[in-house]
Picture 1 (cartoon, rainbow, N blue to C red):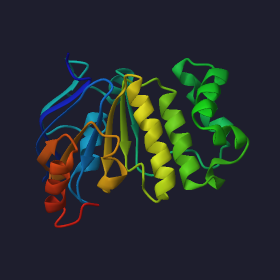
Picture 2: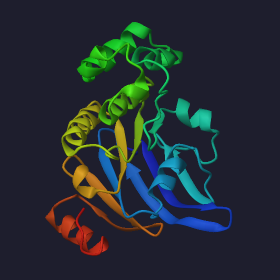
Picture 3: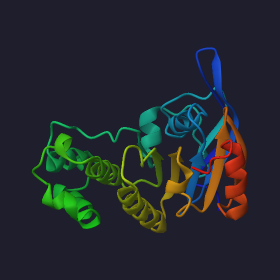
Length: 235
């Protein structure tokens, strides 16, 4: 079976500066793949390429086994790709309910979107009339996830889900991400802090200076190699 998302020998640049040097990465339905690496490694650019937000310099992007290289952003989104960027991406001046209401453009009713969101994250139901900007960081991330899932994605791209959040909240969020994957969604997660995501990942890749230096199942041998790539730090 073809992966739902595949990057083949992808190179990408900002003006004259190449930041990805031949990335090969794939994510299958129901799989969680963690993309790890230090700041400046090219992780976010990889997600942007996968989402159609940033152009390829060379190489190919495949979605559901079909060549999607160079497709317009809207066509990539209609192919079932959802990117939740770093910074959560909620509308801070709107209430939780209004943030969810905006997702009815997907064709789902307000009632259905709210039912799914509040079942997955009950605290959002209690905060339904609260302005999103006054939610805690964890609650804002839950809202961002709920908004993204309203598009019923086949491929979910998450950028630094743990950023600025307490470890307990991060654990709860990643439990939900694992459940999303079990429903058949292909999940690619960018994380700087490996410990946050490796417990739920089926596969992991380490990006260093725009190249995948190591990838495989996140077992103890992988973690040992990871520590070396992080210059002695496993986190």
